[in-house]
Image (cartoon, rainbow, N blue to C red; front, side):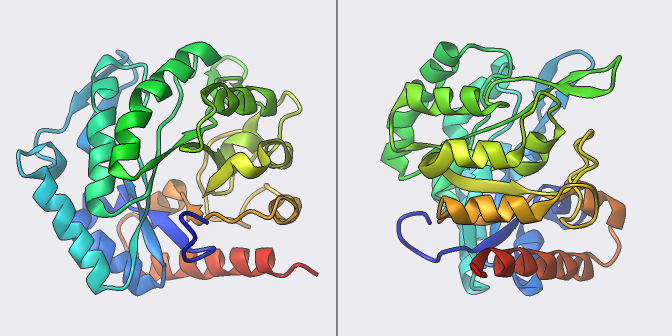
Length: 296
């Protein structure tokens, strides 16, 4: 629970909705579907060319206009009018990209202006604990001024020849704990991506990460996959066994929110019946939280 309010809220990210309806309508649809809040993904303000390894700004995105703060305030008002809020945001990645690194301070500002209290900022996949520590220490004073916590997230590298995930910063329990503890600041916390954790083939899994992170864990990205590829599907639809994961969250007395990052599920909708698709996801999200709240 962040700042002692509204335990166990459910949210979903709005990146995929932007292409169909834009930010403002996306917030309305998420509220109508029954969610408590939204994850403001800032990916759509940028584009990353993975082939050439270079990031770009999307010049026509409202967050890249001189009036981006007004846009944030408008989204905040729409959310409040619909009884929801920004539960978290997600900065552009990869942070190894020079342009994207320059956007991290602006991403924190955007989070605060839209009403969010937590922003997920990935570590550099291939950097050392000390290098990532220095990045977070550079960002934290400004984040504190804005009233925003930063959450590191576990990612992965990819072996194209053998079709498997490879270790990256925060992908193992030891690495994740070391990253958080190296900064040693209550305003840097952990966001566990359950799907990413379950892709690893080195003995790592979501349960181990949850138990190791313990009180450090204050945010979640929840989705399903085949335990090989990053499918971002609706929970309980593929191969991840969520029951032991939920029990591990109960064991550490997890008090954060539940964010459902199901971009793959959204892609399968192909823009059809967006509200219906969101309602189905919301029903699964409520089922997930009900299982968590059932401590028997």
